[in-house]
Amino acid sequence: MLRSLVRRHALPPSTPLLCVLFSTGTSVSSSGVTASPDPHFMVEYLMNTCGFSADVASKVSKIIAWKPGLLGRDVETNLAPKFKFLRDMGLSESDIIVIVRRNPIVIAFNCENALLPRFKVWESSFGSKEILLKNLRRRSWFFSSNIDNVVRPNINFLRDECGIPEDRVSLVIKRDPGFIAQNPDTI
Image 1 (cartoon, rainbow, N blue to C red):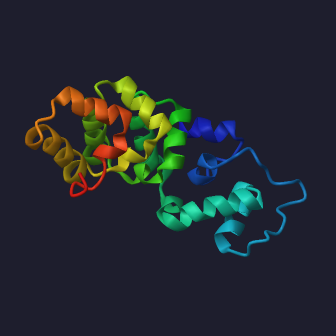
Image 2 (cartoon, rainbow, N blue to C red):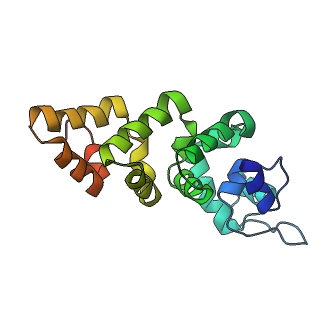
Image 3 (cartoon, helix red, strand yellow):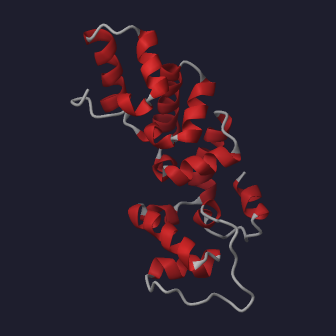
């Protein structure tokens, strides 16, 4: 999948995955890369390596500054298994790109120890895989919530201590997954 994504964007295989994920179709002019109004190293790097415009490079550099490890991820051994896992869960390539763009922490998760448990808990909470996927496409940030320390304790609190039936808890989660993903002390 990643190779096909790279090929579709006509980038050499050695191009960092980040360039593909954040590409907006801009390209380097035939005369070369123009100087950036922002002298920040990362902006220059993204312009020179990925062919981003100065504006796009500036926006992407802010994400990278937040999570610089994105640049060091190995595509074949680290990223490809995660993208394969997400695709196997029913997400399309475009869905995966949207989710990773909105919530890049997802690619830092281990498939078996983090992604799969999250997927199972959220699928169960939403009541179906289709509803989970619909919510992931719209607002994927909730997927990074800590399952063991936040989501499960909140669900257990509402169900066991407040006596709210499982179907009502599921209804709340379907309408606003952020409610169940907030700090347990807040609930």
